[in-house]
Length: 363
Ligand SMILES: [Zn+2]
Image 1: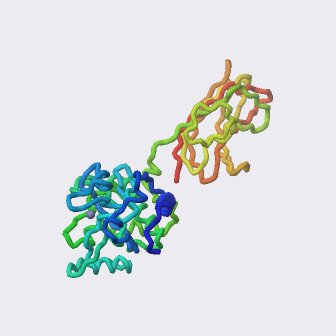
Image 2 (image 1 turned 60 degrees about the horizontal axis):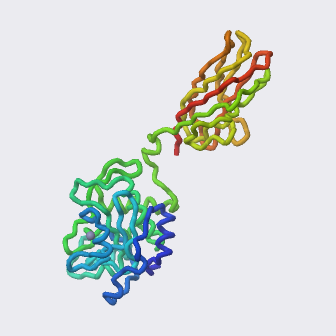
Image 3 (image 1 turned 60 degrees about the vertical axis):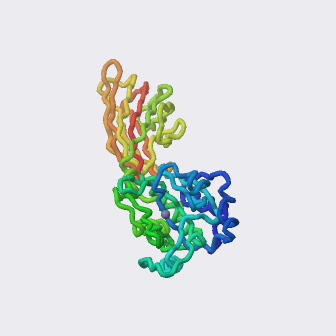
């Protein structure tokens, strides 16, 4: 389809693609169509720019520049990765586009060098995105800004059933020597810092379009992010009958940053995750020299799938205390529980059981 996106289509496409956005007052009726007598559309691509300044929203939305009335783009992408919707009508951003490049965008072919002998008005047919950045070669586009940048282009491509060949940069289309967009990018996916090129942006948009709109690229951050803290215990002591495995039901929840511990439940972490921590146990009534076995047991739903090696707590005079180390890796869909086996012939009391763990959730 080549009809420009309606406000409802804009919102739905951006939401589906995971683009954080806000709507500037009046954006749904802002545009240069009436002033120029030229109706925006049919649309054939997305043209990308950098602002070469900071706090450019007022200039882009309403003030314009000398000889260039606003709006100067359809949207502004801020440094914080949030898109501001500015206009859904015709915007003054593209200027004259070399016709040979324009034709290549329409056909989604590799873009040739501009032949300046024939031009078209790019504002008729191209969405304009202004990305906040100085474009001085030093000002960096933060990760989250570039992530949104890719998503924004992909959202419009997906809406119009375009490929990444419909994505272009002002420097590729302009016959007036424009150099935008340019600048270093902090990183994207598992890539570290790199210099922005339109070829790379198109490749990243193409990768997105090969996935559902809800997709997110795998990032280093996903595996190196800070762990969540889990701290569970017993609201009251419990009794342990001899000779049988008993799950520790954690009835006290001080901290559960993963949200994996169900109320009063035995599961304390859900995979995929790695974790490390301790379970500190205090028993009353465990005869001196008798043993309580402690083990981590993996479940899938209610089914026990894997028992991990046991630790032994040996009864000592005057009450028994032991902290058991917990370090493990849990596969997707698995939960971990703690189980105790009272090997004495006495009914003994678990006076306290305090679990503290750091949990790294995996993607
Ligand atoms: Zn530009």
